[in-house]
Image (cartoon, rainbow, N blue to C red; front, side, top):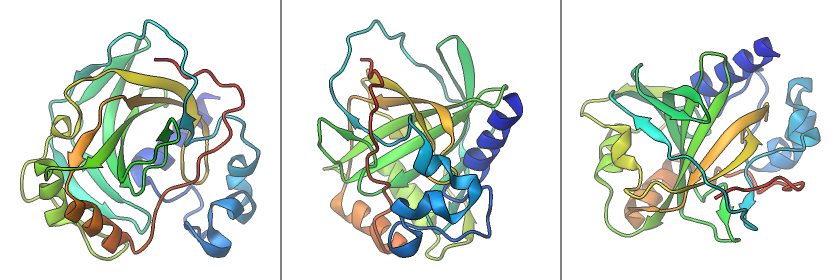
Length: 245
C-alpha cells in the first residue's frame, strides 16, 4: 500500500495534469474526455470504478471541530510549467502544512477554469489546487476558489511567465509566495477524494477553503486562452462521503 501511495504522489506532485502512462493521450473533450478516461488505459481504471472520486459538489455539511491548517510556507515558486492540461507552478522544498496529525510538504500548485469542485452547486471562474505530500507518500490538496474582482498580484506575476504552448516551462523571474494566493480567513471544508486527473488515484485528503480570493476577468481570460478550453473534470458522485466543516 505504501508503494502505491508513493507512486500516486509521484504522478500528481511531479507531473500534475499528466499521468503515470505518459504516452496515453487524454484531455477534457472528445474521445479522450473525462467520460472515457477509465477506458484509455488499465492504469486509469479508478477514473471509472472509484467510489471516492474528485471533484465533488460540496453540500450537506456536517459540523465538526476541524483543527486549523497550520501553514508554514517559507519558500518561493521556482518555475511555471504548461503541461498541456494546466498551468503548474513548482515550489522550493521546505514549505509545509500540518493537519490531521501529519506534516505535508508543498510541491506545486496549479489551476482549473472553471472550478472543478462546486459549493452548494455554485461553480467559480477559477480554482487553485495546492498539492502537498507527506513522507509516507500520502497527499493533501488545499483548494482555493477564485472569483472575479480586483486583479491578483500573485497571479499577475505567474501569468507573466506563463508558457503559451504545452510542454514548455519558464523559470520564475519574480518572487511569488504561495501564501499570497490563499484567503485571509482559513476556515475550510474537508473530505476524502482522489486526483482529478488520470490515474484518478484515491486516498487524497481534500481541504477546500471557505473564503474565495479575487482575480480579474482579464486574468481568467488569459488562462483560458492559453489552455484553449475548459480544464475541469465534472463533479463526481459523493457516495455518502461526509463533508466536514
